[in-house]
Length: 120
View 1 (cartoon, rainbow, N blue to C red):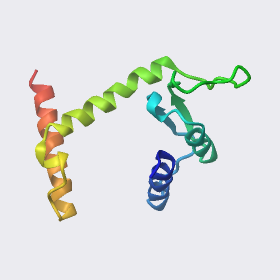
View 2: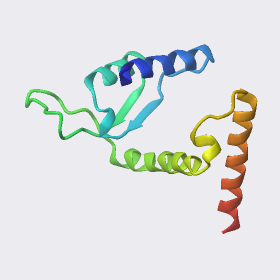
View 3: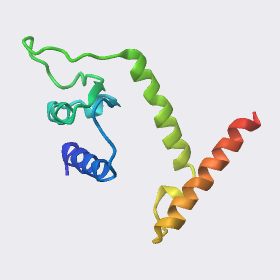
View 4: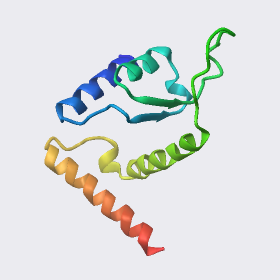
């Protein structure tokens, strides 16, 4: 399944939860640089800030999309939080069959990370 199909599934889930996607932005690295994903975001009125993939050739006639370097730097905060969560083996692979327990483990991890942060 391609990134566009997964993106579509995510959008449907968010819309079912009555969360508006318009006027939000997607801040992603060059691995997500595809014309199809950019069009899917445009269709849902999401702004994109996706780094250009140097391995994907751009014709001289193609217009480069807007890219904000400062927004792009902020994406590392999310990636760092995700990697912190990956340090908890219980969360890395979902062993729990009960959703409530799985979510509770996430809350415990957030508390541990927060306590580590304020301890400094």
